[in-house]
Length: 437
Ligand SMILES: Cc1cc2nc3c(=O)[nH]c(=O)nc-3n(C[C@H](O)[C@H](O)[C@H](O)COP(=O)(O)OP(=O)(O)OC[C@H]3O[C@@H](n4cnc5c(N)ncnc54)[C@H](O)[C@@H]3O)c2cc1C
Image (cartoon, rainbow, N blue to C red; front, top):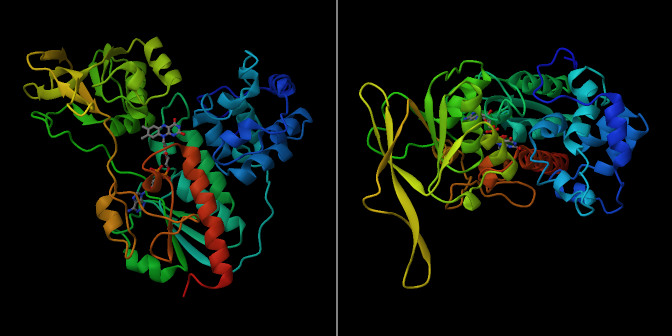
């Protein structure tokens, strides 16, 4: 895949643009941009290599630290990470467009087939990885580069995790994610799609087959709210809808859509709904704008697509004959308790209805509780997150974990950092001969 063949959601810079942008970089010695990156990519280093026209070197600098550097270039909230930390902000100048420079630098290596890494001598260690999302793929790539044999098992028919199925199409399309997965496979990683561990292959079998196991199963779907009428056709999980959009199967022409929630999934779902033709799109959130967890730049994008924000409102029930036709809500407010604490409550007598043809839940993903309970000796915290030590090893000495199932849901770049660092810990352990015993 090269730049002309890709259906890339972003327009990758051309050489002139990249050089002009690279020469604007102040190459700060203390690199706040690098410190803001969970994978600590040497940002001034790779930008300097772009300036010297050393694209292969630049790609190596990025991919050594972050093997999913191409997707992170597209999906990372750079406004609050690397570019957000750029010193030019303090000088009231436009920060360096680090994401697009990173996309430029990695294009030929990740999507163009330019070889970068030398094959590593095989050590004989074998690692099984559960989940081909960013955490699992980063772990797999790092272990392969360290000389271990790696098999990644993924429940889905298409690997890539939420990069393939969940992030908004205006950040990265499915084809770009799948092309990046092919690049990871080209390093020597074996991926077995449509293979759910715990169903298609047992956990015991996996543990017996491999010297070490990495768990990168992410999070589950958005659970039901438990409201009357929720089983009506037209009420769905926002993640299912985004996957439909990504597969090109969503057309909401003429529909009236409400999305419940105030986080990044909700904001992606409303924008995507507007982009596939919805006539009116409401975002229903029980608190105010300042309390939304969605990023300000994503909120601005939703507003430019005509999304209507219905703040201080909580869903009460779904109504309709045959399919959902209205979402009944109640107004909310904070009430002070005697101890000085603030409680969010619904206000009696403030019911109102939004006429809708579709409602999506984006109120937070559940944990894979049933699956995690099948992992022998692996403990979770009260929030259902897998407990790991500083090397991402779980309470089972043969199993490591990372990504959303450990941090409860952050960004792709956090999952990549977990997977990479877990791989380094697994490598140390396998070389010492301890984990497989
Ligand atoms: C709607 C949405 C939009 C997002 N947008 C962004 C964004 O724009 N930018 C950003 O940086 N982050 C974004 N994120 C967050 C980001 O996608 C996640 O933090 C990241 O994907 C986590 O990676 P992971 O590998 O831990 O999990 P996942 O990406 O969820 O991957 C887990 C993988 O495990 C597999 N799996 C699960 N159970 C099993 C099993 N039993 N056996 C085998 N395989 C299994 C799944 O099929 C999946 O492929 C978004 C998240 C959501 C929900």
